[in-house]
Image 1 (cartoon, rainbow, N blue to C red):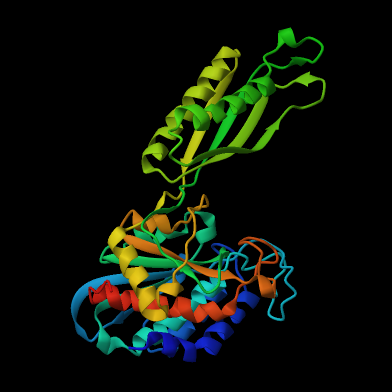
Image 2: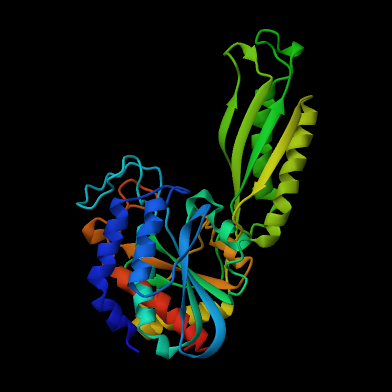
Length: 392
């Protein structure tokens, strides 16, 4: 096989597909036309696409001609963001305040390219490659639907990737262990007693109580948590107070918790709850915590990471690999990893000479399109290497 060379021959087609999806972005849970376009492309390849009556996204299987009973899933996400594009590209979004600012248009194009490569190489592998074009990743819960629908029940391993703006093109980063953090969100509601600002002794100040809670929450990071474990606790939203001269009786705060440690994640809710309730009590107020668990730690399986890294080297040599630090952002790909082992790669798309320097979720986000063929080739090479049990 010469998948790198074959992917090179598909480059123009892959870029064309990327630009089509970029022009026509759709938000999470609204990916109707995107799903229809993907179904059409898969049918053109002779595949049988499967959709859901109550959810967008599509999946299809490619069965190898050699003996084998393993199934590997390749995943691409398909939704866009509520951002007004400011790139001035000729193929910029045609939809106001909607943009593929995270790069999911690239993921779709790369996986379609991989589908072409894999359908042309059925004779080279046994088992099944399942392609999933997943809806609603940006909602943080998009992957859960497919897990609950049983799509992974017969899957043995999964691979996913993301174009990444802080990694230089054309490097690809693959590493074992934790790669992206968990993302759990919370709401704290503080209740006090109202009074006039000139007579605070008649009230219980919910704002002062909230401020004390905020300050104490930071001691979780600095004193309760092991400093060797990454942890960030952020209050990003606070609302309270009816008027400048009134002691507020009500404050609502919203925040997020990020960590790469599964053990820390299991402890944080109790740590926060203890502070919220204790500080409120010390101030004579009441406070409640609503803690919601979102995507967990994205953790790359060691064996599968070795296969993926070996696939990069097989395609583009040792120099094809690049280093990248841990990321405190999250990915709902982690829901799949709670069901089956998997690996997640970063595809470098930064090119300072071309001004491609803006990070994911920026209104001027763009990619070095020459890397897309590499992403397509890696999808295919990983699948074949896994099914053929080769770790190079």
